[in-house]
Length: 328
Image (cartoon, rainbow, N blue to C red; front, side, top):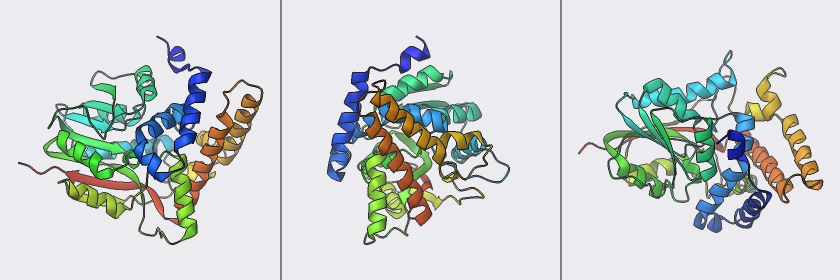
């Protein structure tokens, strides 16, 4: 089957996903209760956009002078492989693997066998189309109820995916269950910083907009993240917000790259405005399904709220954690 056939979706299917997402994304309790539908539909609708704008790795990374966007993404992923100290005989789980960019990188570096799990059937389809290395596999499933036996994996990692969990401690208890004693659980996630003030209307509104438009049931403080890990039995060996470096992670979205940077023309403000106009026109002349303009508006809001939250320093997508399951 060709890639073109795999990514073709009917207008009715897209319209249905848009309608369902719009019905459930604006209420925190509904987002939590129906997180599976929320996140599945979100990535059915946005995976192609992420790939076009960001590549196969759906995450942020800090950057240094002289380093390209792609190099920063690869360094960010490679650091996790280093922290896990992977060996070729290890079995590793990537929870919330997207279309597999980080998985392929870490598998190539380490030689370990890596299983990627994502709740989105569309992402599994895309991942398999892009390519499945011999030491990897992609499966569809929910990290709130992992379809694996106890003590199945030597290590587990996650990159900006746990933020989609409606109850972090339940997700962590599942990771703890499938991880072998002595195994490490490492990753990066999106969290609120200690500068977030829930009595500040600007802070509250900015985060609410992010949650609604990024399919996030509820963002939590970094301290809550650590407490949830410890509550299920993990020993947290390290946790910190990765320094921004010379070029903060949000700059590609904010027009901070050089005008000659290819990434700027994919992700910067002008690219987003042009894309929105094209979608508006496509729906108006009935090339795109009804509701596409609504989803484009949602995308614009999500990026604006993300940028505002980062500049207020009340949110980070670079919270690093390294936890370990105790030896028996």
